[in-house]
Length: 212
Image (tube, rainbow, N blue to C red):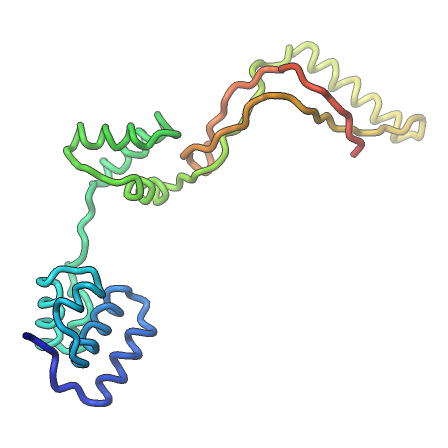
């Protein structure tokens, strides 16, 4: 049975400090593992604690025995490699924009096009790095106002404002609200500066006027 041996009091104190204060999760794990092994924990027990393979524990031991504290850190060039190229990440972003409420379809396209099986969590990480967020879809009016009517109303409002400025009238502003059975506006993955919009038509509703 293999154990870490020969640790002095200062080394144990520094391992404890690294375990408690390091900003790197893997480094904290390795420091704690070395300390527990010195205290008599078996390989099988360490595997259960850290949820890693036997080979991983041996690699941690080897790195410690050859490099001491430097062995707790990843060497340059090590670490998890990116699953997708920049071009593939852009394609994933486009697929999400095509089906913003259904990441399962994006998973299927990734598997079909590139043969990669990925989780929704991985897809979310990619699109978040592309400045997309999970937010409510914006409702917009289904049609546009008739230009002639709109211009006439703007001119009429300007005249009323002139009368108010001379003290002839007092303009009161109100806002319209109401109650209806229009379904809620769903959430979807979308770019922060380019919100998704869905057409919305007037429906039967109970309208109220609220003074501002």
